[in-house]
Image (cartoon, rainbow, N blue to C red; front, side, top):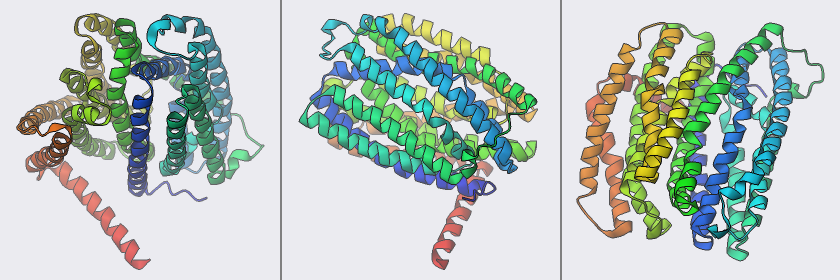
Length: 518
């Protein structure tokens, strides 16, 4: 299969469009499955789901960041059609991931005796907590024996292939789990289906990678060059600290909430987390598509071209993720009340802080994308570690005072105190080799605009009360129209907005022309 790596804009748009459309289908099926879940099982099962997922995600830090390091090398190999180097990288990656899977399995088993301290006998869980934990562990480990081949598809800017496969498997999983819950109400069978579908997705994706890149099956593979291996280990070592820091920031909340408030609190918060992760999984298709293309850009384009592109994408990220956060905050309460029940609604402060974390994390992800695709792995690792440590300590302290809201606010606080100022400094100084002052001015202006527009939108949303269905419908209309209209009025003559609009118009024109000729 011939892969066109040069059509970066086309690849980005195709990956994003397919990803967004497929994710909407997945969201619908997963949402229906969750609705059935909360009506058949108790809040404690939601808590177990979130707790074990976080514990095993932390265990996955043994991945060491090798995925990002390998992908960075693959960008160059594929951009310059160096098949032999790509073969060598993938063979090395396979050996590493098999070893990592075994390490995670061993570490997970060692932690098993301590699981009962978090899930007590009076928590409302009927099944053996060790059996449930083992199934979650198996679901995590099984992916490492197949997932390495998906990386070359991502590096080739063909993410849509993985998206289509994942969508088909997810729909099958959700339908099967819904049937099992309604017929048997058996949580163990529910988890067994999840394990099987994880295996199925990575097996199918692995076979697709071989179809696209037949050279992956060739037996004659040269070892990685010493200099490249040295660079891989150096980048992986740097990314390891980043990986630990990320887990401390994003994967400790449910553990701390369970310790402070019990499984029921974790279960209540898990609906907010589920909706947030659903939204992020949808928007992450943009990150995935852009990152694949940026890897190619940073491999071949000039510094000036990269900087111009950065500011355009920065503007787009602000607009898009501010709008996502605004919608989440103003719609999530009514959505949870309507679909899951009023007993699952938490204080409005939880919605506000969760939305704030969404914007702070996702809008700032662009810096991570540029930093990683420029190979600046060694910068910022200790600052990220400080972010994780501050998050854990602040979560415990604020959680005792403010409950779930305090634990969530600790994430925002830790990010603002560390990475949100350090990453721009590093990216601009060592990547673009220029001052980051212009970035900070633009970012502060974006924050001011966002707060003002959010307050106006919230004021309009609170002017009526028609019950959950009416409120949700009216607020959806307001959230779609008002923020976007105000941003358009402010930025309609902005060169960044005009450039993005020109790109999209050009892509649309090509698409229409292609349809007409076909």
